[in-house]
Length: 104
Image 1 (cartoon, one colour):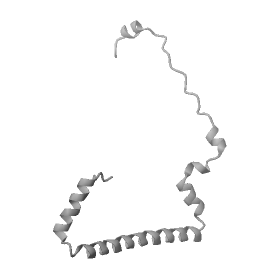
Image 2 (tube, helix red, strand yellow; image 1 turned 45 degrees about the vertical axis):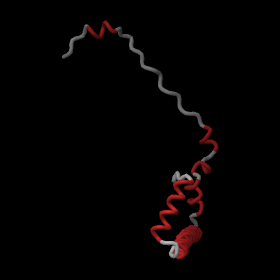
Image 3 (cartoon, rainbow, N blue to C red; image 1 turned 90 degrees about the horizontal axis):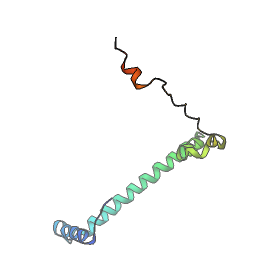
């Protein structure tokens, strides 16, 4: 997704030091870590709430079906052959027969 090389990353770090200042960088990183930790906790809490809801309402099989819908397909249905294509329509008229007709 982000295609940063070492030189680009080093340039961003140096620019960050000049913009923020070397004294404020530890506080900035600490706040960034807190924010990431909060986002991870929110994601965890949402997934736990979803799991609890699914268990309380006996909807786990729907959840598993939505994760892997082909897992629940009967083998009989999966092994069925596709119907044969219809036969090709062939015309017995030659191109000369169609050109001699006049449109109405």
